[in-house]
Length: 345
Image (tube, rainbow, N blue to C red; front, side, top):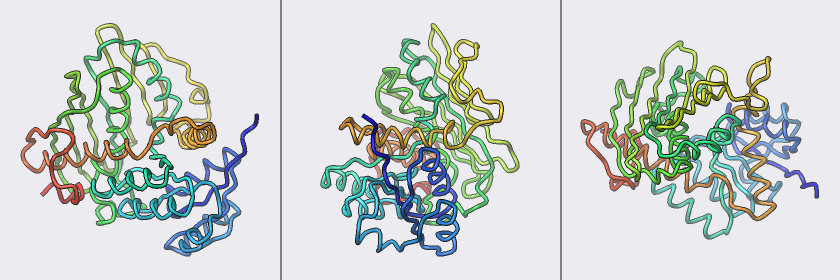
């Protein structure tokens, strides 16, 4: 049976909302409305997708679609998502999930209360390259090495130091490699993260750099390196190895996967025209998977539980870095009502 395509509303109209809009267009999903605190941005995105603009109150007063995608600043994510859940929408929340763990707790409570799971939009987990790595990593046996790196210029389209963003590179950018490492370790049978140490240099600048040493229940020690590098080409990769083999995924500048040094062909990423943001970086695949699982009653692929686990690591890393790389147990035992930037001081 052919599944019905969902109707979508966009809650927010910035750069990331535009990427989600393009993913919906790629899937043939109609966007029924765009709402934003900026009327100019809402109008521009609405024209792009052929949809009307609406106020936030409009979307909450009457459910205008099946699915709502929340792409506002992280400090607003939880209140926005809870309002939309209570209005009857299925909800997608862009990463980072929230700025504080207490807010992440509130969202998970709202999921339980409404009986609907939120999709935590860690799009890279659904990218073809990472999808293939996760499917194969279990065959390596016990991992002896796991690392992820994300280095690029700081964003120019917004000020990541604003309080509504809650932190710098390790929060804003770091949620992605942290999410990938957690998912890879789980698929490899390494268990959950149990402790970490972290160092952050040049905090609050466009050269902020963070290194996290994340230990898992199996004793595997993963390394995550994140940083702003002005003027640089993005460099994103993930590597897992054991005594029997190595898997290496490169995400930027060109998605690719290697097994023991040999190239692994992965669907669309072999195209000569270059990678597609919505397809090769997972935006469209994750939305399609989310809707399929909702329609078939299967578990949602990445919920706010994963988003909270990632935020738990990020919070603990800032606490560690602010205290001379002290070891911190996980789940994070410190304050749940402070942002990562607050926890650094």
